[in-house]
Image (cartoon, rainbow, N blue to C red; front, side):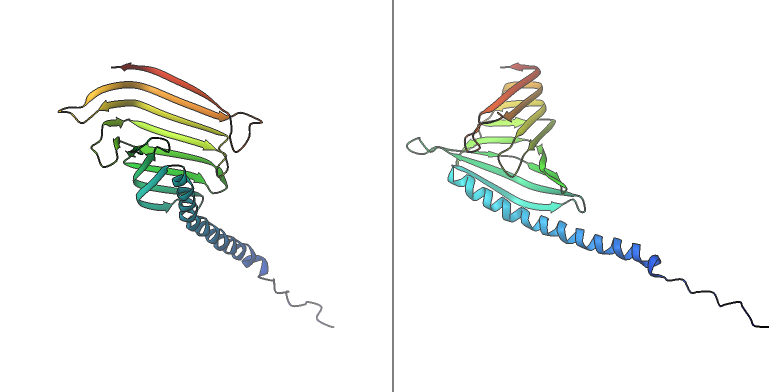
Length: 209
């Protein structure tokens, strides 16, 4: 009588390792994509700064860093400043605004939506002069939709906004606002190189000195 019992077939281990290997490959590819995108932040920022400088708006940042791996890009700028140079006044006038910090956040899968948080205080002064205005707030945020092309919508929100005139023996209060919002959007059908903007300003509570 022949032995009809056959040896058990050895199961393939391909299925056991396929999923972890696929996850590992996807993680490596995503990490490479994130670090490439992070490396482009400086390149794009420098190109944008050069373009803005031609229009008389000179932006600077004492220290810039990029974080947020794996799903976000968080660009932190410490001690940012912007110098506005008048293109028509003779002699040229320039004003410098300085801020404590800006944090810009974008989801890597939706880079057209950018959210920013501002840390005060901010100062405004003529170039090479002492600040004449000081602006502070409890919460300052902005959101922009449509970057890197012409923004489609933008919002700016401040809570507990305080504006003081400085330079004297003591700061002089100019404005106190509990809550202020500024919303703007590009009018549909307007020219991209010279877009028409609709703006709405909302103020809740406050005093003007």
